[in-house]
Figure 1 (cartoon, helix red, strand yellow):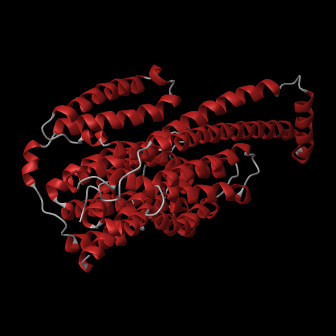
Figure 2: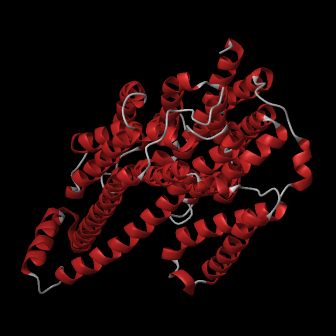
Figure 3: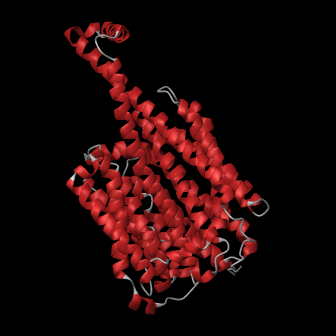
Length: 508
């Protein structure tokens, strides 16, 4: 392996780290961004969602673009555009501007992620896979996991603007170094003549509208809202047309025939579920800590840091075992570990903090690496180099789509169960309930020093207690649902065919 290529690849990995880190770096600091931009509670989740859905559209497109432009130009343009959009995010003065710049940041920067995966399985011989696969697996999972921690420290020490400004100098370095060092392949501009623009439009309509329906539906009574109804129609129509183009166009925007490879298809399903565990749990824990415990961004970051440490410690162990142990066994243990972690949190109360969440986070961090490395090898390890760029885009799409769909469904489930539990609690907390009246009297005596305001303050405190309790119960339901999902995936692992020796399709 020549040194120039190795250094070039490491620069690309660092660029991928920045792109994935940015998905979650804002998650612990959404309250600060909301205050800084005077955004509403309904608007602020779109700082996350706009980035994710734009990236979801960009990732499958990257396979075609990297064949047209070459890896060198594709990666340099992605890194440069990502850096510029990071600067624009930092200068946003309204939530509308922020959402636009975040979407562009995700769309332009998203191409870096699959390009690194494709390069790793193309330029390195099979003998090096046990080193390379854990490295990119660690970056792909560690970056979003430590995102809340990094974001919490930056917001606390400086301001939320630095969540984006921190990308500028490293972004310039990655852009320049990859442009100067990467020489893995040559551009093929002839592919532009048959570029499937219609397929791109249908794919964007399908994925974009799907995310909008999932995100906004529960807040607007689903299809009763005109915008949600219109997006559902566009999503369905675009989906049909996208799949039709994918199988009939001479040069489709995404070659879905890669799914005919059973190992690749199995890896993508597992990657989708892993995306829910990776992005979904990285989102849920900060929401609980902020809403229920009232933690600051810094405190959330410090609490979430455990998963990152466990992943860092597990990566070399998982890498060492990946060449010696059946990858299906590693996957099964990994998803079972996920299920154990979420099962523990089904006993959640409003008093849980760092120590109660320690074991679930340890299980999550270790399980991520035990899943990620074998899934990479199962999905991409035996594909021929000619199919690698397209397949890498599809594979990474499934993980990010799992994250996008997972976030939308998590929000939906959380809101629905919260409403249900509040309704049930309100039935119990009535003037006919002796326990409720006694509790209210006790609270009122505590506020007696405020005179005539005491009854109102006691009632408000009681209402807040009920709301928090309802939210905690909704979190318990959510973690139970995730436990069932991960357990089902662990049980399905034996259905995956054991891959042949890594590199059966080669890549030297």
